[in-house]
Image (cartoon, rainbow, N blue to C red; front, top):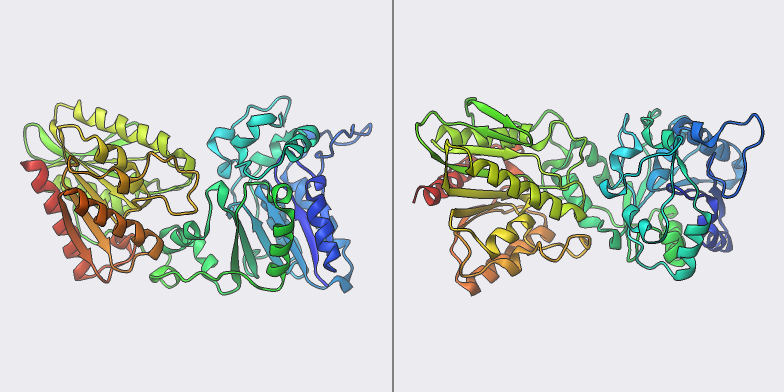
Length: 501
C-alpha cells in the first residue's frame, strides 16, 4: 500500500486536495492532505500560540515531518507530493527522514536548490507587499498572477476565494536548507501545460541549463503532463489522482536528452575560442565591449536565451559564452554588446523585448557606435524575441543572427504571447539572417528551425546557413572541436560582413 502526503502551494491548505484524496483512497492508497501551520481557513489562534505571521519555512518542514512520522510502518512506500511552494517543506522533510520518504512528486513547481527561498521561483507578476508579516491572498482574477487558472470551474474559483488565507511571509523568504540528499531517490515531475511548462522545457534545462538539472535525466525520474492549469487538484482531480498512482508505480516518461549533459564536468563552460579581454563599459543591464578602432563602429548586440532565473549567477552577460562573443567581436573592430534581459518565465517575453529595445536605443545613441549599422544576434529561447525585428525591420538593422534558436513556441509553451513567432514574422522585407544550426539539437527546437527555414524560403528571405553537424545546443561551452570553432568564426564573419556594407 502506498501512502501519499500532499502539500499544497501558497494560501491553501489540506482542503484543496479533497477530491484527489477521495480518489486515491478509493484506489486502495492512504492519503494525507497536510494543512500547514498558520494556513487553517477561519481558525483563530489560541491564546499563547505562535501567531501566523511568525510561522516560517522551518515550521512547515516540521509539519510535514510530523505527518510522515505518524504514518504506520505497514503503509509501505511514502510518496511526498509538493505543489508550488509546497515543494520547499516537502524537500526539507525528505532530508530529515530520508529513509522513510520513497518518492518525491514535483507538481507544477520548480526544483529549488539549497539556500533558495520560495520567492526566487515565484512569478514576477505575483509580487505582493506583506501586511503585518502576512501576504494577502489573491481573489478573483488575481489568482491568474500566481499561475494559470485554466480548467477551474466557477465553483472551484469560489472555493479558492472563500477558503484562501494569508501566507506567512517568512515561509517564502526563509532559505531552504537541504540535508540528507533529497534528490537521491525516485522523483516524478507533473507538469501542467496550461501553465506554460512541459517536458520540452525540462529537456532544454537538462541539455543546456545549470548542472543541478542533470539529475532530471536520471532513469529514476519520470514525467507526466496534464492538460490543465496550475491547480490540477481542483481543475482535474481525477487525472491528477491517476497520475499520482502511476508515479507511485514508477511509470512516467524518461528523458532522452542528446548531448553531454550527463557526463560533462561541473567546471565545463569555457568559451571555445581563446579571446583576449577588451575594455568593457557597463551601463545598467548593458555591457559594451569596445574595439581599439577609432570613429563610430558597427555594433553587434547579443541576446541571450531563457527563461533564466533572476538569481542565476553569473548572469548571462557575465557568462563565458557571452563574454567570449563580446570580446571576439570587439577584437575584430566592432562594438560587442551584451545584456541581461528579464526573461524569467514564458510570460515574460514582452518585458524581455522591451529590455532588448531599450538596449538597442542606448547603443545607437553612443557616439562610438555607428547607429546605422547594427546587428542583433539571438540565442536559444531568445530566438522568439527576433520576431518583431523580422516583421518590421528598421533601416539601420543590417542583420539578424540566430544560433540554435527557438523560432516558434513549442506546443507546451502556451504562456508565450502570439506575437513572438519568428516563423510567421519572416518575410521578403526581413533583414539578412545568419542562422547557425546545431546538428544534435533537441528535436522539438529543431522542428521550429526547420519550419523557419521553409517559411524563409517561401518568402524569399536571405538566409546564410552555418551548419554544425556534430554540435549540441549551447555548443560554444560544451563542444570544443575544430568544427565548432570554425562555425563560430564563420558566423561572426558573416554578421560583420553584413554590418560593414
